[in-house]
Length: 282
Image (tube, rainbow, N blue to C red; front, side):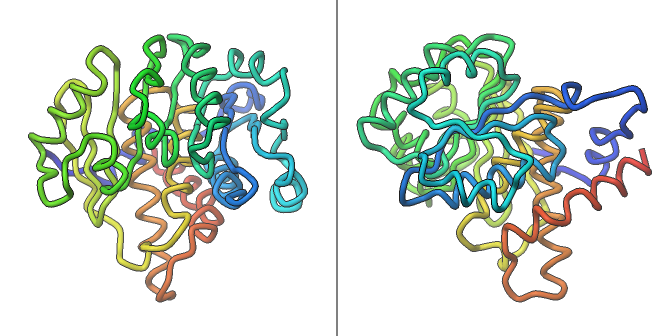
């Protein structure tokens, strides 16, 4: 096991060349936010936007349109019942699915459609309800995708593999990852007070930063958005994920110096400034 260090940020975050455009920084699709949990996918979108993703589309319940565009007008919207969604899925570099998705029959069908239409050139980030659905039906695990990043908290991980939280040791987590995703290139970001990252190559890394002020709703949605934004613009690889995890907690630590509670939306708000600092150092 090794610790993620601040060096990962200067390694991954680079100055943007003058001759570039939004298409150079990744096309990302976010799927989630039913009629009761629109805030989840909006926080994902805000994190992806502020972490630098070039083009962001959100597939969500139609009731979320006004709130999404009032908060983040830079983000594109598609009704998740629109037939054009299937065509959009095939054009993305990164897809984040799960926050606020729900676990009803429609959500199940959405996951089935997604896993049948992703490709080896894409990165798929699965969080929250997407993982609950896989726990209910392992047939929803995609097998034809370049990289899968799963981002459960410990209870979601328990629901997925039946390992109770006190027994989620490094060896048990690696074994479960191999069993659930036997042939895929997978990264497990297991969220806790010090998040652990596991890979299908049996690498184990721990995130040393973060604070208890971050124990609030929406924090995981924000992390999923940052991971999506980083893999979209810096590539679907382990370093991109590690940098996203570290920056998310580092931002939380900076806010916690002044605030008792760290709001996820405040983390998203300071990402551009932090990324500028590390791009200038690189």
